[in-house]
Amino acid sequence: MDNLNNNQTSTHFLQDASFIRLKSAEIAYSFAPESLKRIGLNGIRVFSNGTNLITWDKIKIIDPEANYGTPGYPLQRIVNFGAQLTF
Image (cartoon, rainbow, N blue to C red; front, side):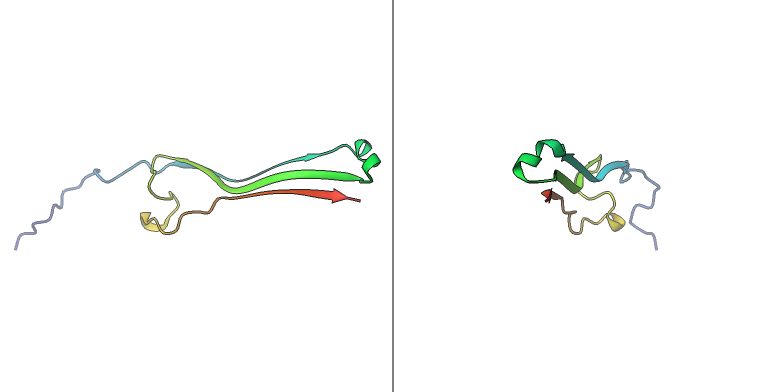
């Protein structure tokens, strides 16, 4: 019996799956201790950090790291802001 499905080798469904991802980053600034003495602090550090910030890829509909190309749940982008005070 002949198989009616197309069994020809084809690159029709192949795509470039290369990607670059900014997985995590943090930026912070510490104020000079001399400028803080008049308000009673020894130090202030303000910061912002994040996880899964951006992905540059050619496959726009799914996560390039997903198993077997299935979309599953999207990656969560997390951004935090904060301050550390030293008395």
